[in-house]
Amino acid sequence: MDEKKLSFEEAVKKLEDIVAKLEEEDVPLEKAIDYYQEGMKLSKLCDEKLQEAQEKVTQILNDNNEEEPFELQEE
Image (cartoon, rainbow, N blue to C red):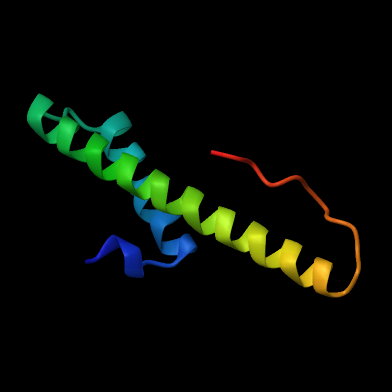
């Protein structure tokens, strides 16, 4: 599945599944590295989706002349 098409909730669920596999199973090193790489991609995707949501909320508030509820993080 293309990670970019996952919803935030789906990505978090997949990330939780990866963490559980790494914590509960005797995972061979190569498989653990694969899980780690996939987890990092999912983590980045979740961060991007949260950033997008934060920007949308800020834009909505700005459009309605309301104060920003949080400061946007610069990368």
